[in-house]
Amino acid sequence: MPYEGSYNWRMRQKIGSDLLLVPGALIVLVRDDGAALFTRRSWNGVWCLPGGGAEEGSSFADTAATELREETGVVVDPADLVGFACLSEAELHTVEYPGGDRNHWFAMCFLAHRWKGEPQPDGDETTEMLWADPASPPSPLEPAHAVALDLLRAFLRDGEFQIS
Image 1 (cartoon, one colour):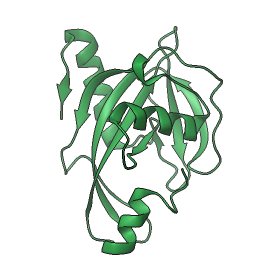
Image 2 (cartoon, rainbow, N blue to C red; image 1 turned 60 degrees about the vertical axis):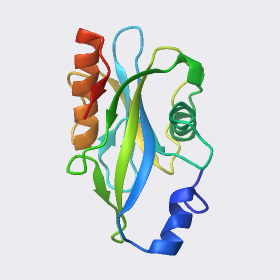
Image 3 (cartoon, helix red, strand yellow; image 1 turned 90 degrees about the vertical axis):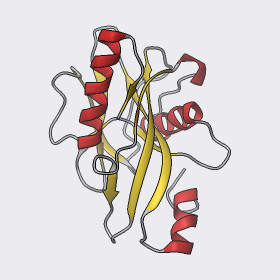
Image 4 (cartoon, one colour; image 1 turned 45 degrees about the vertical axis):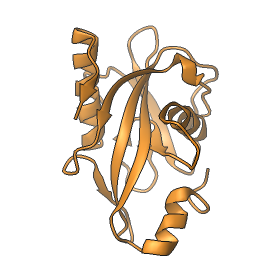
């Protein structure tokens, strides 16, 4: 969904640039060779994992699947997603956007090994994408997403849901 008309946009019309608490999701799409999909954000040029904010009535898994489809064209069944962590620390996951809007994101992190389609940048939110070893992600990488990759490694090692 384009930003204009989204839940986040509608809240901004009411509160201006004040801090907004936003639920969201990110997804680590992993190929059979272990490479993960990274996207480059159009608004700041930073690499990240696909993801974004929830819309009204959407679950975390639905949000992850929707954001992945919107940003990359890839379709994943929410039932195939594996939740491995959540990110909620304000120091880690507060983003200031051009124009001064600030969001404190609360993100559920998912892992996916099955999907349909070939990833392509949407040209709106993402300008390019690449497959890379999650242990050697592209730079600069969104700091919260670097932590998400650390949490993924801990989850894969211990099998326990991670909280940050």
